[in-house]
Length: 631
Ligand code: AMP
Image (cartoon, rainbow, N blue to C red; front, side, top):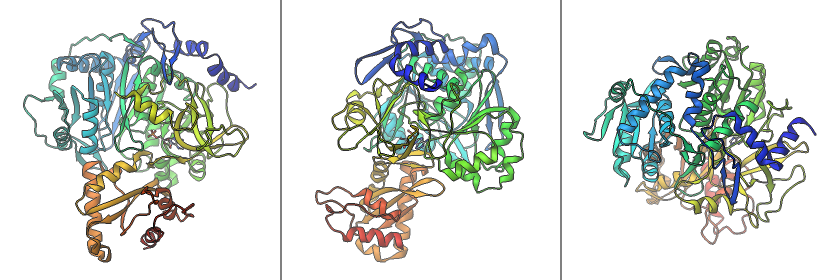
């Protein structure tokens, strides 16, 4: 057996001993005796009698050895800000922020919603929550008021932390009006709103509710706030993600299991050493930002770069200049970003000294072979694709090179990662598929490993129903991804089995987009599907049946309505969810029982065969889609 095969086997067959060993990678206040409690499947409790704290492991723990080494490196090519915080300085900022939150009445278990651009204060806020046992819920800054409102309502935060604005490509995006509107729409009202004023956009303040971050931080400049020792199974955060239904789910994560999972992944997968520098180009609003901008690198004693800006501004060399300047050893990005760079002058890849870089990790969407090859040749470092989800919190499939150097195969995110009992099953029978090349649903057999979601926030039943009861005859966790495995055990991911689409690595629910579009008064019916796109992986395409059917023959009116519909989506959900095109038809293809034939629509859009159409109510509906696409 190879070293990795043995490591992997032990993680499943000798689970308690394996994870007790990994648990030593973090500091505990009370070392756990209980390792994996699987007495109530599918809920798994990790290190249940242990107590620890994420902030302690990310910050305080390193003060002994590396207080004056860089911890957080903040770079914004939007505002020109660039600042390095040492572990000591980070410790000070986080204690201040924790004191500010306490001052606003935040206690252990209270929720704090963070709706912020990529600024250092966002990381301080997250770590401050972790420090006092408040549950943070970071909402991606690109989401607009309706998306934000549903999250505020579900998380019911005591405090919301936000800022005047974000900035993208030099364009200021005001956050405060979106936040005010979201609070107005939400049934739950936060007691306090804490606002970082970047001086980018003016802010109207609501007296009594709104507070100024800088002012309150200043008042707490000498604050000392000790870490709360939390049960390993206490909740550290929730992060919302899209699924089949319109309502986003709050993925809930624990404290101790997450800390151990991240510490182990930093060592075994991301080849991390304390004192090195990690650069993840994601956003704190996504799970990658939680795990591999904020917590993972800091827990590993590394400096982490937090970057606000585009990969091609001021030019396509910006990321590589940061690699050179800060001697980045590991970088994490998404295939879409690489495809954006691929359109630029390849000379930028050779302009800087990249000798510090050990590997580039890519995740979030399928990595196509030409893109992988282009960046691999350009950088001359290993490209490591890894597959996971918001739900898992850390890689499910990857190459675990820290245990044993593995051969990479372009197009595949690799092998099951230790701790994950990954299988392929038949979608209708639930039967396990063991032959190479068989296509099935990627599932995970319980118990789920440390770091994996605990449940859906406030809704255990939804967790079980959504994830564990979809495969007939078996209680397994469904990833909702299609996959195949080759003879060497390498997996290939073939796309989602549900109505989730992946646009530039951003996960979006087509149902959410449909609900938003339906709110336009001239929309009678709508179908949104994901269509393959050379740059973004997928884009959303909307097909609308207008209330006023005469519009279909009027090109000018159609163009106007298309623009209006896009604006509705921009205002409600955010530009990330805006469909690439809105097309108009008089009828949508449905089954005789009234179910929308999304897969058939998608196939037609991608120029593929529409598949089995025996149940279609009116074949002319699909012809209309064909005609609309051809036009
Ligand atoms: P998210 O929860 O936003 O991280 O999105 C998770 C989904 O993104 C997965 O269920 C996959 O559909 C897709 N995904 C993530 N990483 C990869 C990858 N390396 N290769 C293919 N698909 C991926």
